[in-house]
Structures are given as structure tokens and as C-alpha cells.
Image (cartoon, rainbow, N blue to C red; front, side):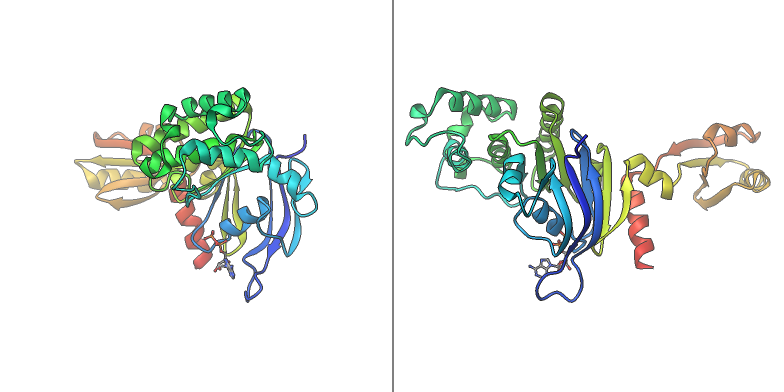
Length: 312
Ligand code: ADP
């Protein structure tokens, strides 16, 4: 199967740069996958996405979107991708629908008509359908400046989807949105993937949003420092932890030492479950416990660990 995104040895050096902003990056994204590109500021995420969406040319290496080369077949690639960027690029003086119409015409999707009601039925149908799915409804006809931040983001999504892209790039899509709008947006994006088998490429600082990704790629200083499922990335670096405490702390400490498990005392005893199950540890303890809970690492724990290792 042709990957939705194929990146090979990608290098980008800006003209005035002394180092490579992107320095030998390689990854694949399968069709229909939800892929998250993570990394601290300056890691090279924006540069990578700009190359993948044809707004920047690579210094070397190859990138293909649905099999099309981003340099030699740029217009084919543009037809395959939808882009929803962090900074809204909507025309505030027009209505939501007018913004969508201009985009549809630029993409040669429909002939231009000066009024919505004169536009082809297929356009009107598609617009209403997308407006309903994102929950914008008839508000799509309001001037953009009267829409809230969340509504403007929804409008961008409608616009980004009019040409039925196969790959959707989302750059910090939920920044500036409240919790409810954020959750709605993710529900909608999930719906899109299920219904239309769209590949999603996300960049975000909200690591919890990447927990749901099929695969994550962590960039640092232009390099890939971790690539895999969130579970793999976490599993390589951080283990589940078991929190325990007992009235007889000395006895519990002795027991843990006998078991040769790795633990520390942060108020309670925190056992690093390196390959052990919580059950195996608890079974070996006779002392009555006053506290018992397990904690699984988050992607954020792994992320911080990876980046700290890089700086060391
Ligand atoms: P991120 O999106 O992960 O924050 P960027 O891709 O924006 O990272 O930046 C990667 C590196 O490239 C940074 O060191 C940044 O300073 C540099 N950079 C970004 N844009 C330019 C530019 N137009 N000219 C020169 N250097 C740039």
C-alpha cells in the first residue's frame, strides 16, 4: 500500500541558518492513520509541515504525499492535502460562507457566482452538510468577525475539507479553544477519520491530544528522537509505578529491599514496575497496607524524559 506520507532523509537548511532546521528526518504514515508530530519550540515541526504541504522546498531528501512528490508534483499534492493552521487565515470582512466559497473557487471545485443562492446545488449541499457536522449550522452565513474563536476554527475546518483532502494537516488545532470546543473538535475529527478514512497529521503541544494517535514522532533539534505508538514510546522510557504505604513503614521498606525492586520514598513508597506486575509485588507483602494505587505514565512523562536525555 502506498503510504499517505513518506518522508526520506529530509533536510532543510534555511539560507541564513548555520545548522539544519530539519536534519535527516525519515518516517512513514499509513493511509487512515492518526499521526502526531511533537517536539519543543524550534524542533523543526513547522518546517517539516511546510515542506509536506509544498509551501517550502527541501534542501535534500524526498517527500511523497499519496505517492506524489512534493517538489515535482506540487499541484497534485496540494489537491491531496487540507491544512488547518494555528493562526486563522480567514477574511474577517466576509461571511463564513464567502470564505469557503473563495477557497472552493481557488481550487476549481465550483464555478464562481456572486451570491450563495446562485452557487450550484452541489456546493450548497456540501457546505450545509459540513456546517452541520462541525456544529456551525446556519452561523456559517454570519460575518467572520462575529464568530467566536471556536466557531472560526470550525469554519477553517469546513474550508480545509471542501476539496475532499486525503491527508489533513492540523497545526495546534485546539490552541485558543475552551475545553468543550476542544472536545467537540476532536470528536468531529475522529468522525471524519472513520467516515472518510482521512489521514491526520497533527502537531501539538497538548500531549494528551497525542495519546490517541496511532503513532507519534518526537523531533528535537531537527532529528527524530522517538517514533512509534504512544505505548511503545512510553514503554521504552518509563514504567508503570505502584504507590504503597503501611503503618509499619520500616517493615514495608525491608520487604521491598528483600524483593530487590527499584523504589523510592516520596511520602509513600513508589515502586518502579520494571517488567513486574503490581500483583506480583503486592502478593509478596504481608504487612497491612494503608495505601495502594498504580499509575501509568503519560506520553508527557515519556516526552519530558526523552528531551531531558537529549539535553544531558
Ligand atoms: P518548531 O515548529 O518545531 O518550533 P521550526 O520549524 O519553526 O520549529 O524551526 C526549526 C529551526 O529553524 C529553528 O532553529 C528556527 O529558528 C529555524 N527557522 C525557522 N524558520 C526560519 C527561517 N525562515 N529562517 C531561518 N531559520 C528559521
